Image (tube, rainbow over all chains, first blue to last red; front, side):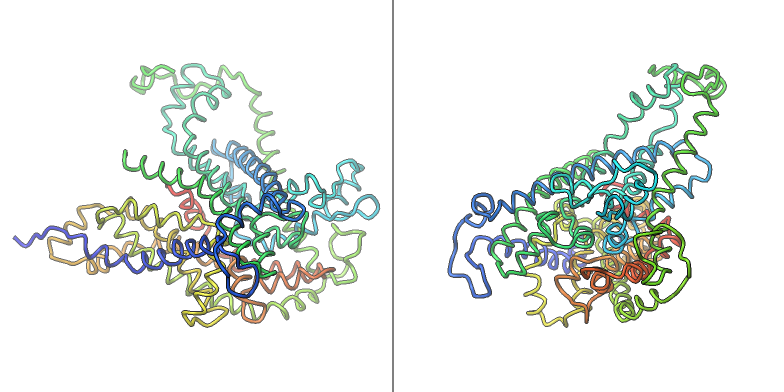
Length: 298
Length: 297
């Protein structure tokens, strides 16, 4: 008998360099950032000592002009518009395509192509499209509205103090709706054909078919789409830097960190980063645990 | 919905999803609506591309307020030349960044994916979840000490640093892609057969697993190439216009107070060309990587 029982030690050895790297560069550095956020290192000189959670509470109580609250508010508006936009548009595209449209590959390829472009590159053209000039100075999309006599649609886009972040989400929606479409298409294709046939035989209308039979099957897909667009949105940095540059009107926490680092206020930058990490973790960790569990069940 | 209908033999079902009692829109109308919408959306999605192309062939003088959407009166390559002059060096550097990143992190991902799907150790699930979390973190949360650590490790600034960083933070997604891939294509028996030979882990991996890994590699290579090519966050924290990748150079070209839009748009096109080419030529696998991002595939 040459059959030896498999031992797991070589496997662990093979994977251990990666584990060490991730332990250091993900968890170790997060720990370092947390540690830094508890100190009073507000300039290039070393910290004098620990200040507890002061750096965090100060973000809410004594940040000039409530800058941090403002950046969170921007993030909320951006995230809501971005998530609703990508999911609605992605779902509509998937619905249009899922029943064997002619030249399906062509439509899919076009809808998905923005995903291959960097936010920095697409930011260049969206800054041009969302030109803030109006009336006779109209440029970009406003020029089209102006030319069509739809002047009331002209918009200050991202420079609007209240709803600017909604406009900032437009390029992101353009870029990622195709991705959500691809998720939904995969979801639809995963539904057994018999379910549809049974519903049709039972005399369900198209609307009932989708509403009562198909959509309930898509719950995992929708969950994935929400998690992915959600965490992307919270980390949004490149796009905003490219469209508006770092500035008050469109500041979100990810940009605020960068701006704070430029002033060498390391402890404050660390506190904002950790806060951002916590928001993402609150969403992602339960999701990962859920996926892990449902995988074990199957 | 009755279960009997599902169970009934196919012969008992009416001939095909009966088209007769159509309660929605009449068919030709529904068809026209469907393709009308598809075309409308294509036009909207392609609009930025049109603007990029048209504007990039205009000369600086033609970028006035009037006729922005028109085709150029005189087609010129001046803006492309200007853009290439400022992006050229970083274009080459970005290849030196993206190619090694794609290859190294794919190889690491393959080894990890193999272990986590077919050569598991106690606690592998927990470890896998901990690895995956690394793919979702906002990198700002590691960025401040990261600068100090790579300096302390003595890694040369600019591209070498970025290769290291993208490889490390690419491990989670590459591991995930290969783990899911191996879990679907490699039967347990194959590995057991390998063990009957007394083949060790490394030999099993090299002689049985790697030869069937090409589809996985295509997906991770494309994914890592694209994301390190398109990255701006690590680039801005860890490099500058003199030693950094093309996104930094493009932002410098396009981000000035009153940018030369024609050159900026030519630059945006130059920047996007490699990843767009990859997408057009290898679209199927490109999407494969994106789907892996949804963790469950």
